[in-house]
Image (cartoon, rainbow over all chains, first blue to last red; front, side):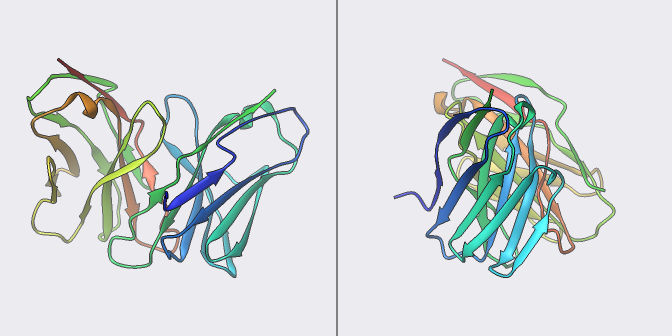
Length: 113
Length: 115
């Protein structure tokens, strides 16, 4: 089984709809992140959380919100989806330490019509 | 602010040959980490290799090695004995010190391995 899972893997929705992307991990990591990737570009950080009670905005948090329900679960919400939020969304996890290497989930491909 | 530059949008290499993917970075921090990730056409991001700014030796992981030249602010990825399965997009990323701990990514290099 994958260490970092994301649901759904693909989603098509309409402008104005609320949508939630979920991330779960079995790696026992304390830190979790949400990124988005647009075609031909690298990843940009939306939100990150260092533990259950810690939530921080990243580079592009406008239009998004998150919830850290447990150490292993971190969800991303689009309150009112718009077409330019069409992207590939990644969840990542890391463990506090020297390298703090981030390990990514398989991604969720979101299309907003 | 941190910046990663990958100047090669696309690269081709013959199977079994070695290839170097370029990465330069810009940061004023003394403590930072450099990462390489592989993204195959299926879309997932796969961690390949890590180099810390205070590491004296270049990192190696199997066929991957990182040519770290601190004074030049470069962190090139070297793939030895290329395989067809190495065809993918490769991203260089940096994490600088501080509370954010976020990764700053380059724009990537698309590597194609030719049979």
